[in-house]
Length: 262
Image (tube, helix red, strand yellow):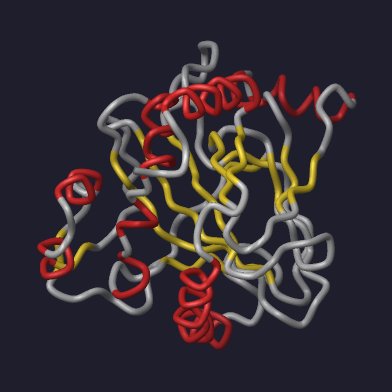
């Protein structure tokens, strides 16, 4: 059923259209995400052991999550409120295309300001939304452990216009503290960056990607085990329809996904 009625979802979608981001506070159960955190810890370690410098810049790791166990929970990726907002903003019958994490550790630095995808057309105005990121942390996030820094309203303008506006102070750089259970939905074209984690504990942030059915980027995908898919409700299976089916999920992935920096 979800937490929100249709009118509230409409209002959240309208706010998203203006600003490119919307926050759902205290949306997921904390205990559920603490189980995700515990399951994630052993997945991060091989990446840190393999590359002490980080695979997404100094002290920062992009880690794809295996679609199994806690990470294949339809109450999370098929949440009625989230999917309802996604459909209002990015069109009916979307697809889920990404399940991963961004994790800065001690020694991480500011990322360059960037978007997570190129424009559809380099020589034309920005289009309506076609890919959204749903972010939620597995630990509480404050100014000390690497909060997202973002801008509002830059999702509907060219990269050059957005960056010039940021430099000129027309768009404020806004840090986003979050508690476990909070959910941020954002247009991936909004200008943003990661900030340093100054603590000794990793700060994992989950990203679930949803896009219009016709939008495909080969560097992001979800390997879906056949037995996991068979146990999901119909709506969840529909969201996953364009992802490859596998017999068993890999534990370490080729992390080729990159942001589009200036």
